[in-house]
Length: 77
Image (cartoon, rainbow, N blue to C red; front, side):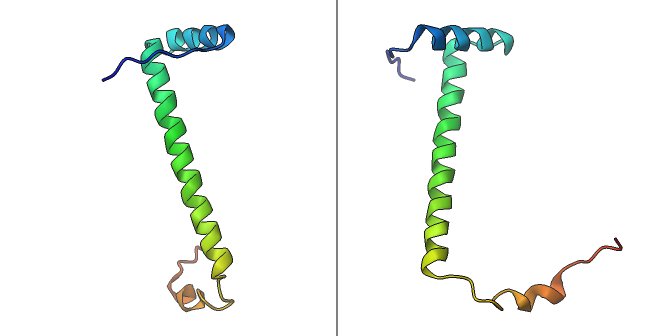
């Protein structure tokens, strides 16, 4: 693990410290988790963008999924 130095706004540090205390964790652990979550959110956004562009380039045909209609499970209501 590496130690890094960051410059943060005082209000942000106070808010992080408050929430970290509530969660019974350290500032470093809270920040690591927040960065991991942000990276995952970014990755998912990039995948969604890739999918959207793919469907824009190759739109779904009107009957493309009709072959699966017989496979659907229909409830009693």
